[in-house]
Amino acid sequence: MSDAIEMIIEPRPTDLGDFSVRRVLPFRNKRMVGPFVFFDHMGPAEFAPGKGIDVRPHPHIGLATVTYLFEGEIMHRDSLGVEQAIRPGAVNWMTAGRGIVHSERTDDAKRARASTLHGIQAWVALPKTHEKTEPAFKHQPSDALPEFERDGVSMKLIAGTAFGLEADVDVLWPTLYIDINAPAGSIIPLPDEHEERALYIVDGGLEIDGTAVDPLTMAILKPGSMPVIKATSDTRVMLCGGKPMDGPRTVWWNFVASDNALLEQAKIDWKAGKFDSVPGDDEFIPLPEK
Image 1 (cartoon, rainbow, N blue to C red):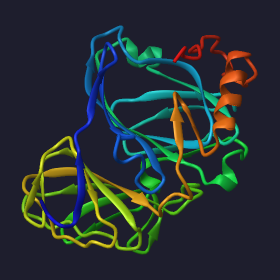
Image 2 (cartoon, helix red, strand yellow; image 1 turned 90 degrees about the vertical axis):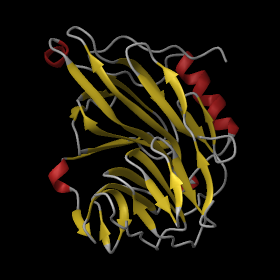
Image 3 (cartoon, helix red, strand yellow; image 1 turned 120 degrees about the vertical axis):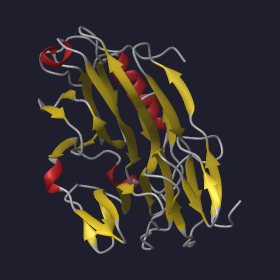
Image 4 (cartoon, rainbow, N blue to C red; image 1 turned 135 degrees about the vertical axis):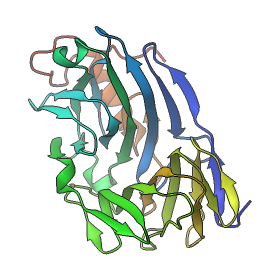
C-alpha cells in the first residue's frame, strides 16, 4: 500500500427498508477526519410511486449537517420554521449548536411518481467554543458554489476552502469538502492547506501512488502527504477533511459532544419534550433505549 495512505475504510451497509446506506464514519480506528465525524453514502435508491423517505422529526446537538445529493430531492423542515427542498449540487448547512429538530421526507408531489435518491449525508463537529451556539440554517443553491477545473478535472467546492477559493457556507472550523469528477487517466490535484484529508470514491476507481483504491471505499491520507492520484476510469470522488478537531467527540444517536454531560442533558431534554418542535409535523423519533 502507498506510504501516503493511512488506512482504507470499507463502509458498513445498513438496510433502511426502502433504501440502504453505507456508513463510513465514524470508524472504529478513525473517529474523525478534520471536523467530519459522520459520513454516510445514501443509495442509489429507486422508489416506486407512493414510496419515499420519511425521517421523522429528530434532534441534534453539537454538530452541523450537510446533505449533498447527486440525484433526487429531500424536503427539509426544522424547528426554526425553515422548509427547504434539498436538490442535487446544492448545500443545506444546518448548525445544530445547543439543539435543533428537523425532518427529512419525500414530499407528496415527488412521492406520486417513481423517483430516485443518491447522495452523501455528513456531519461536522462544532468546535468547543460553539457547541452551544444558537441553531441556524443556510441554503446555498448549486450555482452559488465555486465550480472550477484543475488539470482537466472538474471540481465543486461544497464547504470550506481549497485552491485559494472559499465557499459561502458558515463553517465554524477549517474545513475541506469538494465534489470531484475526474475523467479516466486524469491526475487529480490535491489542495495542501488542510492537514487531514480523505477521499471517498462514489464510483469509478483511483490509484494513489500506484495503489488501487476500489469504489465505495474511503482512503485516509497521511498528514502532509502529496501523492499522485490517478483516475483509473471516469470517477466521482468526495474529498473531505480539514484541521484536526480540538479534542475527541462522542457520537450518541444524533448527538455529538466533547462533554458527556451535554449528551446526558440532551437525552433528558428530548425524552421530556423540551426541544422545539417542527411546525406542522407532530411526529417524532423516540429516544433509543440503548
